[in-house]
Length: 402
Image 1 (cartoon, rainbow, N blue to C red):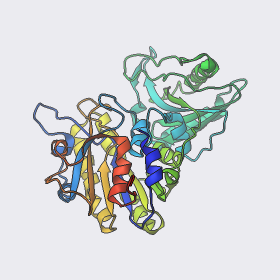
Image 2 (cartoon, helix red, strand yellow):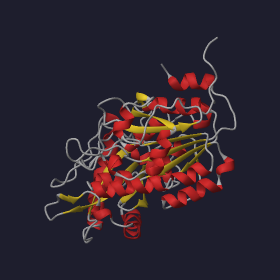
Image 3 (cartoon, helix red, strand yellow):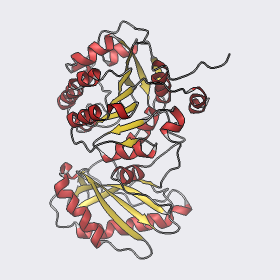
Image 4 (cartoon, rainbow, N blue to C red):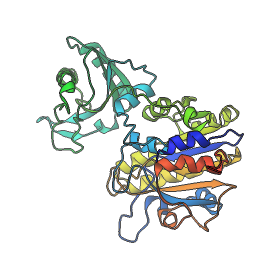
């Protein structure tokens, strides 16, 4: 069943407002059998109170057993089938910083990394080098790297991230990542996944060779890896599908890019979750769907720091009363995937979901946690059904059939 096609038929307009608050990588794992997850260990009085007047469930971003990247995870949240609408991280990063991709562009999301004297990776994120140090390096690469037959554009993004755009005829984007996803080994060569992408892979290898010469004297960011080779996608907009005026409030470029690619309007330029809520308050009367993104539940999980992820979860909890004060008709709190500190990476585990509205069939939940979500009213479902659930609770869907 094509759920988006069905929603297109049933959508209707009213004045009800929906907030989707995403704690990136929210789901977790206990460090010891029977112990608490990060969400369960955190003190979350506001989310727990919200759970008592809402409904809970567990959500599979793609399908059971499949570990999602951030792009597919968010596409699922927005109701777009992640396997069908595969958008690479390069296109997301480029769009997120306001870069306008053209038809013949291939965009690549890159990480500065640290290499030892043997060329092996010792830190995949160059110590999370701050933006004020990484941005000049990206600008230097933009000025220095020249490849015959193609225009090379390098743009800083944030911290260790930057984006490279190869612009020229005959470029395709089916090239495997050069990040081996572990330390102690060198970056991988760019490997084409089809014949049409061989030229792009060759250009990518030339870029890396020149870039590492430019970066050779850097103490941390003396190397790079490349991920998410991609072109500009063609995708129906959020308003076309759901009939809502959507706003996106996010600090990280990738999530801003994804929101923009599905037709959300980027609002403000926040750097903290508190600033994001400031923006939400300021634009409340101008939109009827709000995507609010919080990154640090994910990054602390990727760091393998259980206690820091607990604190990040508590930070997420702290802003809930400000959202409630605005009077949303539907408030959804969830994540795009699980990032357990125990694994220090994204995982396949189902993500906790909280949906609160006056139209809820209350399920007796006492707190927002993975344990409580297992027995919640929403059950276990795939992420593409989250938007229909939110719209239904906002009374924005007509009855199907006679």
